[in-house]
Length: 375
Image 1 (cartoon, rainbow, N blue to C red):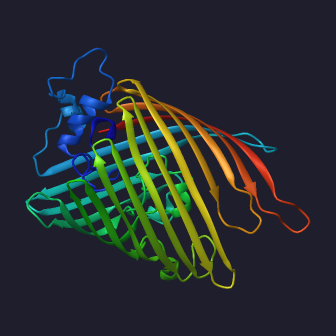
Image 2 (cartoon, helix red, strand yellow):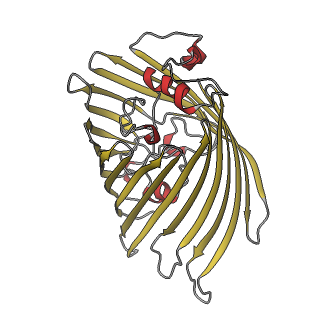
Image 3 (cartoon, helix red, strand yellow):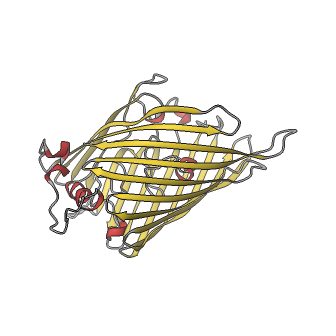
């Protein structure tokens, strides 16, 4: 949306930092006017089609209630060098979300089904086929125009650029995607003039147990937009877990980074982020690594996007060569509330040395096709 001069997120998203939650009525209208393919129809009147509403406008809602549904199905093909080809259908999302706003009071919640994965968000305890809740929170707007919002509950961590590509190394390495790594805690967000940001006190993820696995600390970002087509920001995160869910030992985890969003011309948007990550693993030493990406999003005609993404990453393991990959993507918003996406990803993954074996690289080719519909 920065290509259209929107630098803040709370105007269109019920989550003040964007991405998570449902769209506001204004956000739904803009998705119809500015995002989907119009097939020659003019959007200059500023009037969105009635199908922009919940359930394509069939079920009108009171102003105090925002409802949404999100279904995303994908076909995944992955070829690791020297290994058998993997192919499968993946249900990426099957969620329902609600947001209620009564004067200054806010409440939001999400419920969904995950046939596999997303275990940090699971409410049930099966290895697969779980009921999940990615977020649920209550909040209060601290001023008349809603620029300041105080919330408590399970929420996405405020850090870096909110990206639907949750497997990007900047999101996976820092554990800050909005797919399943949300945490419980309290946040204070603000959006005033050219400045926006959010800070969160992290209490841990109470949907995993025992308590020793839960991370506690803080996460924050601040972003400044000197002009309506450029925004730059900084992020910081610190957590401590008595027993890290990945490494199984006490882990002090730090992440700090910078990010930018820029539209030099309306058809083109550039996104970039670079984060350093440092971990202190009790009895297992220290490691310092990084993750970074640059993405170019070109929209030759409204509703159709071509994207190129480049990534680099190093986890900080001793002797590990840095990993790199490149994405070629196309997204078509072909009907109201619907889009399809294709990604081709080539990765060169650094493998650290082991006794008697030097460091090396493993090449991976991934293809992903997705169909997405939101209510």
